[in-house]
Image (cartoon, rainbow over all chains, first blue to last red; front, top):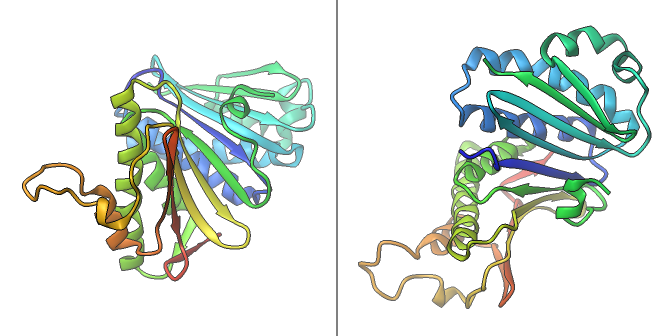
Amino acid sequence: MSSDDHIGFAFGSCEKSIVSRSVMAAVDQLCAATDVPVSLLDALEVPLSESLSALYPLGIHDAKVWVADGRLSVRIGVATASGDTSIDMFGEADALIRSFFDEIERPSDTCIELTASLT
Amino acid sequence: MSEVSARVDAPTGCCFTMALPNSLVSIAVARSVVRRVTTFASDDAQSSFLIALTEVVGNAVDEHVRLGSVDPVTMTVSYDDSDTVSVSDCGQGYDAEPASVVPSNPSQESGRGLAIARSMVPEMAIESTGSGTTVTLPLVGLGIVR
């Protein structure tokens, strides 16, 4: 798999569970293609699901997932500007999400990029 | 507009569109996503649908690789009025009549993908032009997206 292999999503009026399950499925397969241990795949499911759930009220309209240099990145585009800090964005789930995603960046007010090590 | 939105049309209604890379990982991703968001009527229904999806996504990726296309293959899962999965490529298209989707030479090693897909999902629809092909696989009778 090349580092150019990324999966993009554009969502219509989708329920939270559809957004979460579709992104998780893509992450699972991208990680599996890079021989990530199953235990790590299991471990990322909850923080990723929590991050999508927390951002869903802001109107998730697109997402992009990719794996490069042993790191998983998930970029999420939302309709409404997110909070300034991760705790503003993720609320009570912030600690859980940050326990897995060691980088949380905001390329813009309506874009959040989460990155985690897969090693 | 984000990078992803720029690469695929913004969907409306109950649907989502995925931009898939031109590599074999797309087949695994497409199968996994459809399996996760769909409740199938039976194991046989799931197998039939996923076999058809494998062939259709594989054909689309092959066409992009053959042409050296940098555009993504796209897959749209729609569950508004009817539940469907559509796969689109930006290839050169082909004659989509049923008689033409099987190889003329029985010993030919490739060229059976659409025939296999149609045998698994007989309601499959193909729209093909010189600038691309969209294959739509209806889930009616096989499952629902929920």
